Amino acid sequence: MAEWSPSSWTQKPIKQDVIYEDLPGLKESLQKLQKLPPLVTTQEIINLKKSLRNVALGKAFVLQGGDCAELFDYCSQEMIEAKVKLLLQMSLVLIWGANKPVIRIARIAGQFAKPRSSPTEVINGVEMPSFRGDNINGFAADAASRHPDPSRLVSAYFHSAATLNYLRASLSSGLADLHSPLDWGLGHVITPSIKEQYAKTVGAVKDALRFMHTVGIDKDRGFETADIFTSHEGLSLEYEQSLTRLLRHPVHAGSSTASPETGYYATSGHFLWIGDRTRQLGGAHVEFFRGIANPIGIKIGPSMAPDELVQLLDIVNPDREVGKVTLISRYGASKIANFLPGHIAAVQASGHIPVWQCDPMHGNTQSTPSGVKTRHFTDILSELKQALEIHRAAGSFLGGMHLELTGEAVTECVGGAAGLTEDGLGERYTTFCDPRLNEKQALELAFLVAGFYREESQE
Image (cartoon, helix red, strand yellow):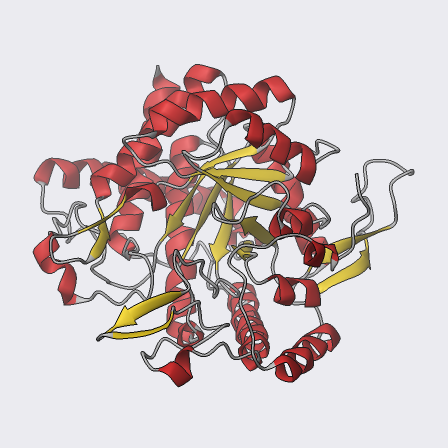
């Protein structure tokens, strides 16, 4: 295979590229990024990689979630804490249901850029560049704001750094302490039978926590904090290249004494993924991703042929590291049964052992008659349940779920136990991109997925 460097992607065709007119400004911003310290450490990255190896082998479960697209304004104490508490609470329910450790990965501290189906859009009769994310241009519908601004790349770094700083500080200060009370309120559930079912689950989780406290197990440091890793789509390759460093591997990170002492780490986040629009075998994004030591994700959907999937795995993971690659399936509830079995069979025959993760959000996006983008809770749940059943039938493991969610009380996805309808979407529809599960819907989904695992273990 051809030699790799952090800049070798520039020799490949690229999708979703950003055209900067201010080339001196771009050069200045990238040079500044190259001098700034890494946002994450090699030890953190390797710890995640080890955990994902266990997920690939069926020994753990990964919960990944956060905003569709972060805004710089989301870098606030309230929003960070809301996401962390929601992921913690969901993970506790999933630990109880699956009886496995849960690895928490947040779409946070870098999930700014978003791929778009068209480089331009028409607003109020005026054609202008599409909003590409806060690290590229502004959301305000005017030509000046929509102009790609390279200084935003540096702003993205500092907003990510501030988010990570508070995330680490709050976790080490007890934000995730299991001794603290959690909000298990079920007042939003309107169906008595569902409320009774959730109440039993909540009671079981509380009983387990009380038992650990009574016998003194919760004195361990692990009950006072939690690891939450960061992730984002590696869309802006100029940014990713600037933060990719040749660093020494942590001690014991290699599998043998013959392993190289150093490797290239993308230090913008712990986990990066390639989107469905940028996974071309000979493209720039695949070229960049094949050289980094981080665990990586690849979005796969109906347009992915089974043999193409195997070729892609061969390129980005030639050494066949177990759990190095997470395959994030995003088919849609009506299509998953037609495509997932073939993809699983092809990967099993290839000898690769990835993490299989279900993204039940992107394949289930639809618009209301008035043109509002939304997702139906029943479709999201259906795709997750089908994924679990298809993997079980194939002798494979569904290793996790990848969700677009927020800790805020938004009204963007319809359905759930609170009975949100399309008429209620306008109450608090605040997303700048795709619709997200609100905190009650996300926790409800965790309850239901935990129930699937409980039922499976009792069969």
